[in-house]
Length: 316
Image 1 (cartoon, rainbow, N blue to C red):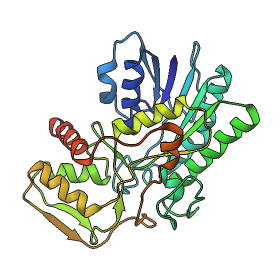
Image 2: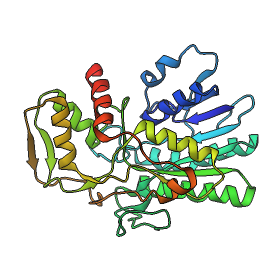
Image 3: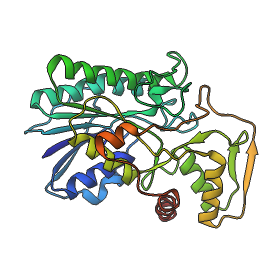
């Protein structure tokens, strides 16, 4: 297949490209490099089955030649307002790529009668009042809050994707990605896994806001990519959660990072400075993925963290 990957120079997108090429496909990446990096795809440069186009998908997308599949992964994703690459710092771009970018990517898929997959997010559930979160939960989202630029962009993206499926008959898929980590995350990404690993490798105490009792569920990127491919090849069009159902506190994650890096600096607790509406609990219900895709994560936290730590150590 010839596959268009928007956001293919990003953390997850670059791993998706690796998998596509490994399975014998041709890959065209479109990325404006606002949050992605050419370093993530440098090892693919010069291949006859890979090409890169620097372009903002919020503008009209033209891809010469046949396209069989469109994977729409483009979007800022970090919720950290202190990160220059997070959606709080890129609010208009985030809204545009979720709305206009999705519309343009769907247009490419329709023009080529290609299969389309949208990478959505667990953030469509907002600060959930239901735990764990299943796909039939409509969410608890503040439409005008500081996180709304990402939440509502993705909710719109899901809606227009289903509209193209129902009205135009386009062959679409939607995945909702929960916290994912692994090699190639930005060192200054601002999310908890990169923060903790960088602090630990610098032999600094790991910073925890509040008591560190807020929970997350961490999925290693290889597992996520496998779920994405299973969804792409399945016949179901409704959203599917992809994430690790093992819930843990931020404090437990910090202790694991310190243990695996041999960091003896311990933890430091600061007043809770998390962004407004930052979810206290986040855990995917993956029954739909298990039933429809025969998928569930295979890589345990220690294994995934070790691989990620080695990648960060090489880049620090």
